[in-house]
Length: 396
Ligand code: ADP
Image 1: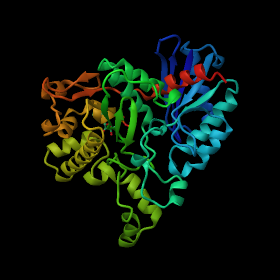
Image 2: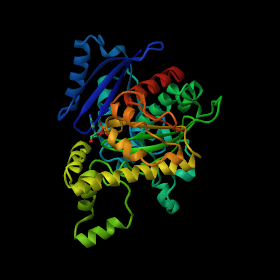
Image 3: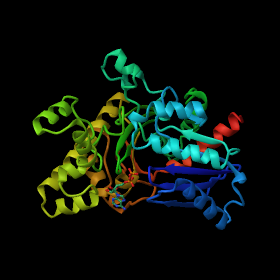
Image 4: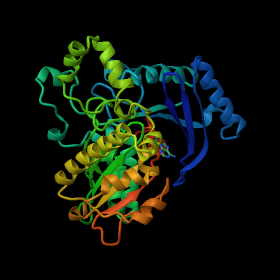
């Protein structure tokens, strides 16, 4: 069973083709185009590359195309992308202006190009649909809630991958199976042993932290939009709701300009005044640049804030996982986040931590109650897996 996973940006198309026959999960091809101006041509060129590589003979070999869709009104989980779902994505395009319009256009083009291939979306919000309501609500009037103003949580594919993989690595096949079944039975399958309590830290260009109880998310640092939570590369993260109207008056700027500055000139870039890439900021901090040091300190303090929140909610944790660009590659950031938590049972092995880059590894000390792990994420594989499960469980 060949499943193409397409990642659609407003000017980019990236793909991975998986063979998910039987129990195999083989990556057959990956590629992509940046600066796309002619999307139908980009889709054509993608199919040509797949044929040239002999990964497929024609698109009729594709069991489905899967998409990591972001958010839709009253729709989440893993679903077929029919006109109703596209209309629901359209209804919430204001919540994900960088993503929803591009996906809607791209999905329509795929539908025109290959009308008989099922198109399936795994929404980034899906992983949070079973989280306790108290963890997902803002204290706003009901009309605001009805308009979609609540915590949704994002990075669901990545955190779900971590939920499954960390359970497997800890020998908890019961929890891994429960996480795998999540969108079919709503997390109802039983846990055989003690509950497994996990905090997943996806630290990258966009960063988020999620608490997970036996494979099911209990909350996410990303709220109504991917603008919130920790500081991101050039986006602000959490901000007091009064700051926006205040800034327009105090700085004499329009609300649109304030929004632009909060999305393009803030986060690590705004704090450091240097760069949105943590590698450059860390180098500057090591060379004595005070703003760069502060940017790192704010980032680390925010990560600890969210870890602390889920640690309390979960009544302690069994495992703390780092993933994505920063989480997989930066031992110094992992060390700063885990510093001085021995009373909570979180103790890094400094040498193992330093030696670990972008590979699966346990980096906690022997006497650490909490297993600290690095697990490279694989969001596209989760899209392929969920797409396959949907095809097998509801063939039409
Ligand atoms: P995104 O959230 O956009 O998918 P990534 O997970 O790729 O992003 O993370 C991007 C960030 O991770 C970069 O801004 C950079 O700070 C950091 N990063 C990525 N690759 C590396 C690396 N090899 N070494 C150190 N830091 C890295």
